[in-house]
Length: 162
Image: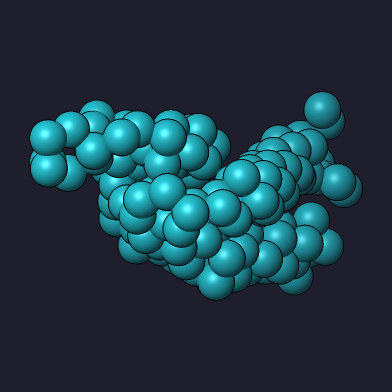
C-alpha cells in the first residue's frame, strides 16, 4: 500500500506541480507580448493573449489537481510512520507556503496581467513592473518546490544509508 501511495504522490507532484512551474514561468513573457500586440482589424489581440490565457488556465486547473500531492504525501508519511519527522514537517510547511503563493499572489497576479494585456495603449503602463513582480514570485514558488524535492530525497536522519 505504501508503494501505491508514494507512486500517486510522486506522479501527482511531477504532473501537477511541474505543469504549474512551467506555465507560471512562461506566463509573464506572453502577457507582455500580448500587450505589445496591436489589435488586428477590430479583432481581439493576437496569438500571445491566447497563449497567456491558456497558461493561466493551466495554473488554475493544475492548482486544484495539485491538492492530491499533499493528501497522498500525508497518507504516505502516516503509512511510513514519519509524520513527526522534522524533514516532513518542514516539507509540509514549505508546501503550504507554495500553495499560499500560488493561490494568493501568482494566480491573482496573472489575472491582473491578463486584464492589462487585453487593454490598449496607456492602460498597460504598469505591465513591465507586474511582469517582473510575477516572475519573482514564480521563481520563489519554484525554489520552494525545489527545496521540498531535496528534503524528500535527502530526508535528514533517514535510515536509508544514503
